[in-house]
Every structure is written in structure tokens, then in C-alpha cells.
Length: 162
Image 1 (cartoon, rainbow, N blue to C red):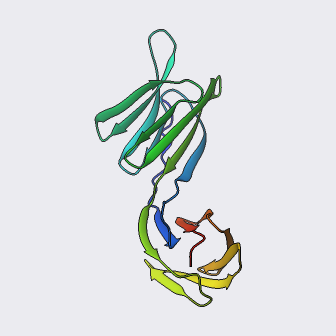
Image 2: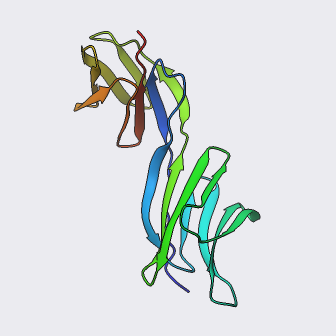
């Protein structure tokens, strides 16, 4: 049996007046038949059929939610999880797995505004016409209007509204 590739993710979304929460990419790469990705309660596995073709299987616990042929451009979207399939080569199938994180809080884009949660401190350090600068536990990040970024396991998003 091939090595199990596990990605256990617990994402938190901190947003500045977000209307539509963005998907955040949590895995981008190749997996081969028998390998699995674990994202929360979901398991993404590549399986091989008797005729040699490959399929992507999405499970929630022991329940199979989706079983799709591994075909370039196929997209699966279920329960805040989005999977995009690329090509399948001898190195495995290329997948992009994204999640829609849980909204936790919002802060106004005003210099000095802070949000604290789970031991994390997010502070607005500068506000421009098209950008907002923030500090996440001392890590500086510039966000464009209507943009998003991930710092550690904190996803940030902005809108053009104040």
C-alpha cells in the first residue's frame, strides 16, 4: 500500500467586511493511486479501475460522495470543498484542493484596529486607496482591495467598502 499523504487543516478566516468568502487553496500537487489527502472530515483518494483508468473519490467518513473519472478540467464542489483535476501522468494526478473557510470575525480598515482570536493578533497597520496593510502576529502583509491572502492558517480577505 502506498504512503498515506495527510493534510489536516483547520482554517480560520479573518475578514475585513467580507461579503463573499474566498476559497483558499490547501493543496496543489500530484497524488498517485492509493494515496489520500485528508481535509477536515473529507478524504480525497485516487483509485485505479480494473481497466487501468483512474478516478478521484471524495469521501466523508466512510460515505462516498463523489467518484469521477480523472479527466483534465473536472471540478468537484461539495460542502465548501472544491477540487479541480488536472492531467494524470506517470507521476500521478494533478489536483488542486481548496476550502471555503469558516468566517470568524471582521475588522474595520482603520489604522490600529485589532482582532484577537485563538491567541492570534491581527492589526491594521496602514490603509491606502487600493490596499490594506496588516500585521498577523508580527508578520506584515499587504492586501489588495477585493483580494485575499493566507498567513499560517489564517485567511484574510478585503472588500472595497469601509
